[in-house]
Length: 545
Figure 1 (cartoon, rainbow, N blue to C red):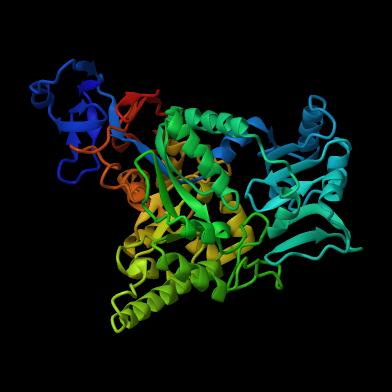
Figure 2 (figure 1 turned 135 degrees about the vertical axis):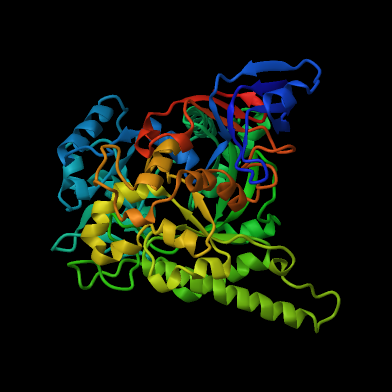
């Protein structure tokens, strides 16, 4: 389809032509950008013309960090997000159990013990909802699992079961499992839950895609962890079937690193619909369950420094191995100790690559230097949630992308104050990172938080919740401008996903992905951003909303 859009307020994110009023689209690519008169003069066969009536037209918005298929399943499963009490969560499980055949797993997500007074829930509480269905509810953070007694029995988790490396089975005073599993211990139950059938995976993914399109998204970076290979297969099937309406940059799990290397996959491989990003590693836990790895202990918990999922030597080994085979690394790091360990690993891996490249120059022609020496790799830290001030400038020095989620700042700020105290000054330090020269890519971490990019932009520029709290914003000196936030959801995300040559701005030759809003985000008070409506969304030259 050839299309001319006129009478628009076009915000291009192209510094050579920041604003325009019209766009010409030939097939799935942008042909020209300019004034109404300039674009109307273009002659295209079978062209359709559309008066945009002054709508605000952006490059297609890209969420640089979420869990696509998991979001689809979260939309289908028991939702206990922000429920006011354990009793209400149990009631929702009981209601689902009444509609579920005995023996079938009941799954859900979203609980936060902080909302319930800070204490972890128990298996006994879930047993009151059902004793004939195994139940597994993932915490909002994604780093804790709440299960009932039947699930524990099926998984073989008992008093004598040891804590796995990088995880913890929460126990009572007598040493009995309470029903909460932290970090890698979640796998003890997750591995006995029957995997969904392929058609159910496709159904969940399409559900999430359509919802994300409706929110204004045209692309996402999918961060699924150990199950990432399975979801990659789902996305390939939908791509082959022509059913995808969302571009995907897929991070692949470190657990499958050898298989990924054996298959010859490299970062940036693929097309604009489905591209390989990097190798996803988890360095630590999360703030909610207080498993983020910290330099100093948590406030009021002198012996709790969080959980390191890998020791520093293992991190270096993973990064070095990935780099040597042309794979960048995308590492989850929440605590300041975890962020420092990841930055250190990137430094040591780079030094090792340089040494190997130097050594290769003295070897026979058949000995090739590592792949990382042949092409630039774009390493990332996901979340960069709290940083030691000495480490902020290292992002720019090392060329590490800070992939951050503004909505976490406003949702987690009170937990930060409670658990990290004065260190909150360097939590979600977006302005410090940007002024230090770091590249920012913005996302949501859905289903942990809403995938609505307007909510993310609002959080970035106000540092406030929807209700306007706290007055003046939480650490307001760390706010971004609207323009900087838009960049993070467009060119910042496109660069992080090896796609800046095709996506991220409205300019000739790039793919025709557009997000159309009711108001110019740069011309309204920041508090009004949440009232802006998504009017249209174009992906690959076709309207999907």
